[in-house]
Length: 188
Image 1: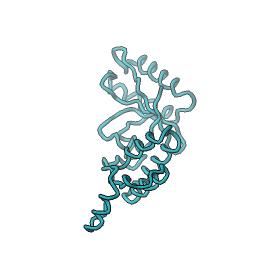
Image 2 (image 1 turned 30 degrees about the horizontal axis):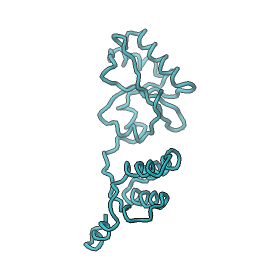
Image 3 (image 1 turned 30 degrees about the vertical axis):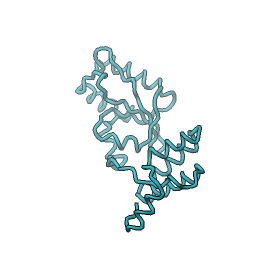
Image 4 (image 1 turned 60 degrees about the vertical axis):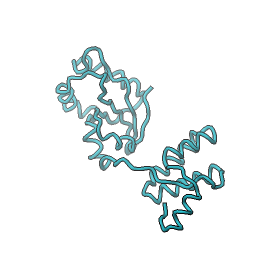
């Protein structure tokens, strides 16, 4: 199964490389299988290896596939570079390291999770989600706030799953700690 990711996920892949194909309509598994077969026939994929962990994402209404260069994928990168140039008009192929700076505005610096005083607050999940969202927005992370809320409302199957999602975005702290910090003139 091809995992779907966001463009923000791509922007966090600074030290990775891969082949991105743009405009992949229809069944993505057929795309993965077809590209693997095509690259094997061109002697670009070596020793029977193939791309198994492809990722899909949407950008400007276009479905794209990322074929990540992983240790288990043996490639003739010179032949792949020539193939990519030769087939660009067909597949819109580009490198991950070119796509992110030129299409997405560059890589994201690894952001620290901001502290968020949730312990001691009204435990209603919508209240906690609102506090966490406000904390993210105050820290310049509006996209993450939106993503967090969507994940909670669309995928969380329980209160604890929702709390775990919140914890992926913020450091959950005590409301009492935040009050102490505010008294000392340091707002967290």
